[in-house]
Amino acid sequence: MGGAPHTPSDTGWPITVQAHSPQFLSSNGQSSPTAAAAAVLLEEPLYDALRIINIAMLAAITNGYESHHTKTSVQKLTASLNDGKIHLLLACSGSVATIKLPNIIQALSKYPSDHLSIRVILTPSASHFLAGQSKEQPTVSGISHLPNVDAVVRDLLPLLYVDADEWKVPWVRGGGILHIELRRWADILVIAPLSANTLAKITGGFADSLLTSVVRAWDPLGDLDTSANNTNTAQGETEAVSSARRLKKRRIIVAPAMNTAMWRHPITAKQLRVLEEEWGVRNVPDPKSEAADNSSAPMTPPHEINQSSAEPDEGDGWFEVLRPQLKKLACGDSGDGAMIEWTQIVAVIEERLGLGA
Image (cartoon, rainbow, N blue to C red; front, side, top):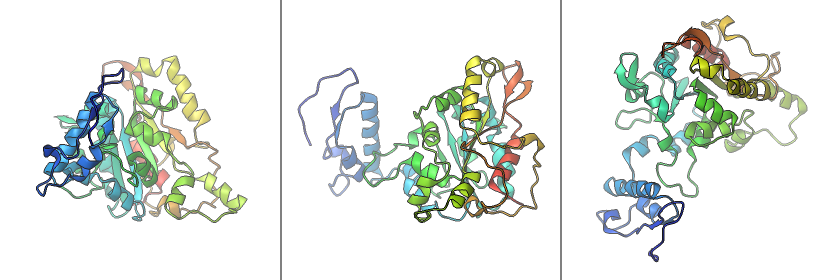
């Protein structure tokens, strides 16, 4: 498709991509699938347009599929929605406490891989703390190889997600949306650490990254997701069933971590009130008093837990905040703001998901 030349606008330089340009043709002279998807008039800044062109060129070289996209396939994620496992979505935002991610995953390695599946979201800032700088800071690839980090086996690299994965290949009708599929997949989302910046974005309603989009699209009661999975209850659901569903919902658990001055800033207190008082679950046990070893509890997927048991009503909220601890911080300051001990985060995960030995 051609088109007359375009003039620059305030939003960038629109360009026209030719589907049948020589660099986009496969060996048999046909346009590659991704090149065809990219062959549209792009009203986007030049940077984004060139990025899509690069994807198309990669597709032409690899028969239409880039290897990294293959192993982070939204279709394969969708296929795992009903695999019978407990699904833990772990996320890290930009804080030094990101280096505790390997500890959390390793501590959960005692649970069989056919029962527990873990997927990881890293914000760009969080990724900077996992570049192999030290023994306690493995590379992102190293995190990928930890136990129970779910793998779509391709080049032996299991599955993690970064912002670039959201729209790695131009979307077409009928294709899945990564942040929605992750929401549907997860039984629980744990953000540890939650940085001051991401806290502000979440409470402000931002959805400008993969992680904040998952949070904004969260479906605590599973009303949308049960419909998507064709397991929703019949119309005319009784009041008793509705009440039982309200007792136990899919939570977002956050463990804030930031400098003491940031933690004590007045805006942080306001943001915490949103998470704890407006969006928070009620009757939350203190994680410090919960036993880390819950070996006597059976391993039951959350969707199979008996909701009619005599548990306290969690209210309308779905957030649970694990408040920071007082200690000397990595920056050298001493005070509150350090992420709660990772062992306590593990204990909360085990309890909330009903994990057993």
